View 1 (cartoon, rainbow, N blue to C red):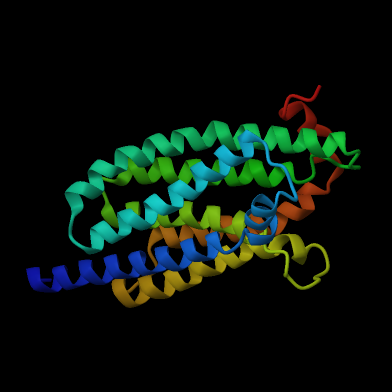
View 2: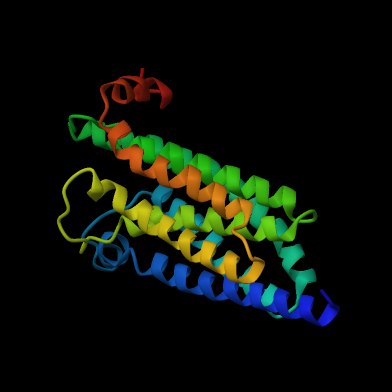
Length: 243
């Protein structure tokens, strides 16, 4: 492959990830009118400072991801790398905020007398674990294997898209467990788009893409069943510090 062909391939790759970043970020932003923007604007619901900080950090990471992909598409790799430090710092803040919010949410459900207040906590555990694993691995690959880095960051982004999509209240009534699987599986469906892109661009499905499909789709399909299981609802209170 000559230099011109490689340059064209890099531009196409940058364009795919930059465009998909904008689309996914827009869908994330559009997922919260009923559960956050409107209640906040009308004062119909009060939010804790923790919830505001949690939302700000996660929105900021998605926004930074969009900026980073646009910089690469524009060829400004130097600034992209410099801003990467901010991405690492922001992700470092997201971990404690995510864990803190998960514990607070479980406590709120318990205070309301919910029968299984830790049922939804499994989603927090999985989302935090997948995001941190994909992001940390992506940082490790940043100066080693750029195609791995790109896809791992993409997986981290999709892991934020799934929980955001679950906030859309106009979802049609669907029976359990598909109702609880749907948000994450919608995000996982984007991996199929990535796999098709890989086939066209690389001639094969990239290992990161294939691995994400193999691991995440079954995991997300099984999570609702785990969430309602007796063993999880017995184990979770201790895990979250509710002894």
